Length: 269
Length: 241
Image (tube, rainbow over the protein chains, first blue to last red):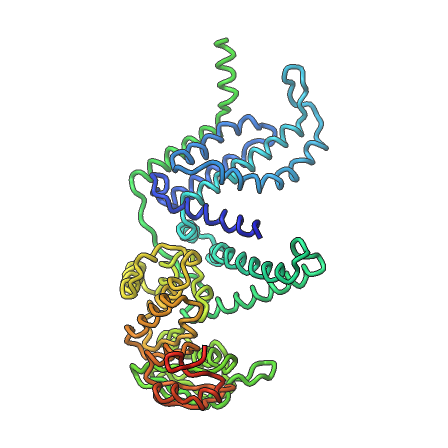
């Protein structure tokens, strides 16, 4: 039950953050979407054995969070949810790639370790960038921009509706769990023997709701094509932000800044 | 304005939800549709707009005969507000939900925004414009759902339990809202006090058939009729609590 409330509170927190009014929130949603996509492409395209190259990218979400007055804690908590997937994906590198790749103060670091760290860092950076985007831009604005980017409207619709009905579904699960707990006071949570029935009921209720929602859509003229909408043109500040962030991301991606800085300090020392 | 004749609906499992239902409603009339649970109220509203297929019978709204060919035309003339606003409000913001119908009608974005703002202003709901539907209170959701249908400028409004699950204040607000709308209305409801307050006429359904049809004051005061329909007198007339 408390997990359910926590999940609902978590969704609500991100929504509340997106409704703030800061310079970052006021930027055109398309600009924020494009810069986030550029950032993710740059991060993902970095070499699999170069975790150090990824370090400068950490500044992008951190600076944005500071400018948008977004607290770190709730976002970091959400990043942690994604890390187990990265751990599973990266762990095989540790096992299978044991070739020596680096020697730090006499300690040999394998290629697998570098790849593992790189996967963790990439996951952190990409998820954090997306969380910052959703914390500074309302979902309605993001989905409108996705349609403008020619993402198939059906996919955008599915995304919007999934998000829209998560809280309704959680409410449904919560009331079913309460009804179950009230009539099964001695069991902690739903027993495995009842889980099938519980999930089945939830599925049936969801299908019924989907049918009613579809009827509501048809009654208002829906024919399978989601009508598009125009959005406001870019302002000067949007262009400046887009140019600066794209340039900064491109420079960070093209040039090996950590090595350059290391070389610089090395020659000074 | 609305002509329903011999309307029969049989579900695939053989259940007869409506049987030979017929009535007519004049332009501007506000008519309540009452009946016990399972009497066929929601099915009738759905069948009138072709969401549920009728086995036989005819429906004519604003001169348009219900048929597969005329579905979009009839739905442009008559709007249905569903019982559960969570089924009706499926977009990421109230603005998008209210704009959904007008956009589907092919209106340009400037006119859509104008239409949405004017509908929300009519319902004193401007503050809901940029809110997320799932974060609204029950009463606010109901108002947003009504706005989403009104934005299509229908001449006929069908309501399925517009005051269910609402606290007394929100219930009164929705009831007052309905009296302010100039549309021809058919309101399926269990709220007999509201029906008595705002409707001139009442159609009583029982087991999918029209049991009685007449003036609201007369029908809802008839304890024998209410009893045979599985209903009770409105509380204001001494109905049991």
